[in-house]
View 1: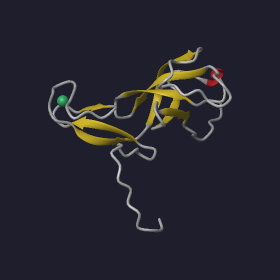
View 2: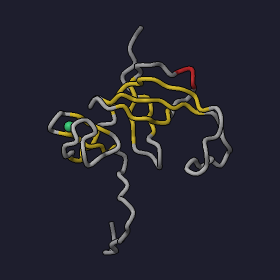
View 3: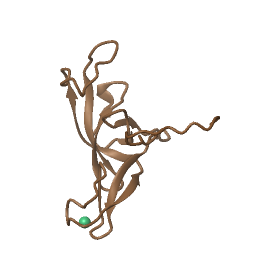
Length: 133
Ligand SMILES: [Zn+2]
């Protein structure tokens, strides 16, 4: 944090890793991405940092390259990837790219941690203590 350079920018500040949603205290609805008004009751909503902790609600595999832009093809070229909806503890479902080692490890209900990515949020399996089975 050296120097006194202050960057002036008109771009919205990108949250480091957290998901910025919003919450309506009137009807207790949480939404992502953040919205100034509540989609349910139209009342004012306040910014709320979401935990990112949730479980996989449903998912699919993207087998062809999405429209570009906004899709940015990775250096190695397109490879199929998993997309899903993660239901957060806050009760909101967030669409995210699933960063998994293999598609065969994906299970509905699996615990995931969502972070705000460069564009679409990313979800990784939540590493919990391995349970004996
Ligand atoms: Zn509301």
